[in-house]
Length: 289
Image 1 (cartoon, one colour):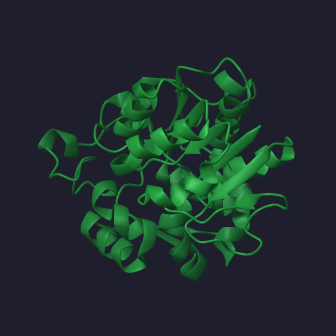
Image 2 (cartoon, one colour):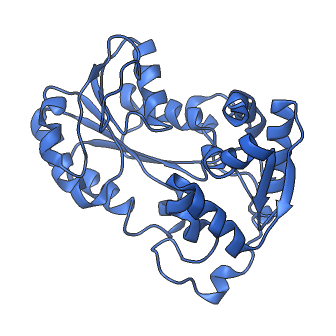
């Protein structure tokens, strides 16, 4: 099977590429910029940009399936190109925020474009990425062995990126997943303070947790740049999912403890979801230097 992976250098995409290669599929990777050694041997790399669909033509030619990174503005055109090129299956990297109804203008339009195509489709909807903590806390842990955060008791179910990739690979390569939307979380509710403790245990070093105000955290994230700066206002409650000022009720602390167990990759893969402790061990070196 010939499969094109868009967003191929992302946290999920690169793991999808690697696993597909291990399974013996003909894999094409679509990064914006090709870097030597970024992909396993045998992967055909096509530079392209989902915001410019015309750059995808060669990469799509003759593909059987597509792993689609979400870009709402061009989704309809990209899906149409994939269908014309012969693809019969599309797996969307979506978001758990679609399941909860918070996302109506980012991931949801991509899902709808794929569903309207008439092709086989599967939506993979992860919740909070464990990898977000590497982007947010990594710089201060590497530099000072400290995490500065305004909400030590805020908690959620962070999901390992490999669990997301495993579900995507099954949906791309096996029967029985068409027409499914899989919401994926981690199996354990963890406060931010406990997440820091697990990272420290994985590193074998002490990490201080310093409580700061939301405004102080915002300044830290903006100074870091990248993911932290791009998402600071949303993550710290200064704006809602759609980029608007949140209503007062949305700013109030949300207690997820009554929710009980959340859906995990196990329902699809048949294997227990990876723990945050496992994720911390997998990325301990990334926090060191």
